[in-house]
Length: 346
Image 1: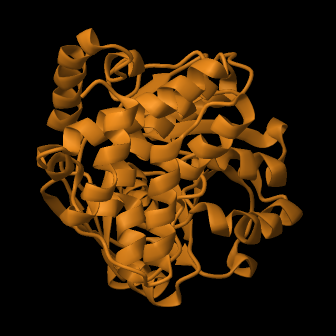
Image 2: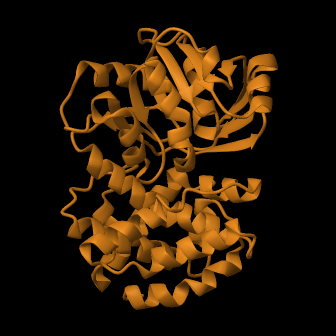
């Protein structure tokens, strides 16, 4: 049993992130139900239990899991939304109609919280970012690959009783940081995802191996800097992400290079083993979230008049993969290097 009061939690999406959270929360004594659309995965989560590898600690955790909302009963304190963007409306509309969740928590990638807010309404929504990594190993099996904190906040930046309660719950999964600038945190996480997850799916590599490629770090910092300049044009107050100030990776002039290298190294010390969720999607033959990650940067750039050729190129490459045109591999980075060279003093 964890140190915190037990809560009734619905994990909406039992993939890598959702599965790890469900296992850790169940082990801590919370009343957890997982809602997932994949019946074979649901069956295995129930019996014999979800096989979890928690950064080397292996366990089998029997979960209460269902694949149909009709099997849900009562009211949940929190609905932790870990779904990918294309599935948000289909999954959440029945739950909203049932009125069975007091507060939804957006914990997905990119700008997915915008889609969630459209369905559940801002008054029912808390927003968080997940910096630790996890991998879906197949039906009934997930692995947490890295340690890193959550950041959570109210849309208006204020502290609230429900936000404190959510922090108490999530602290049984990972360290929790409260922020009065959740939109800045979301955008900082977007820089992280568009740069590292974007190149992870392009190259087929975990984050650390992307950086180790001959021009990998150059393209990472170019992607990051492109998104950073969009955020600045939006007057976004960027928050610390995974212990790093976003400005410390951005390269706006040559003297920034050394600091950028050092900061990328710090990030990789904690997140280097992360396998991009978009890469996992491509490997499973699924549609990715590239349109709300790299495409999210591109769309925002168009609104504020900032060109985003690198993010545009990543979107095009990933859509190609989705359409069976090419496949992830380290050699795919070569098409991005010339664009990066035009973007930065590298």
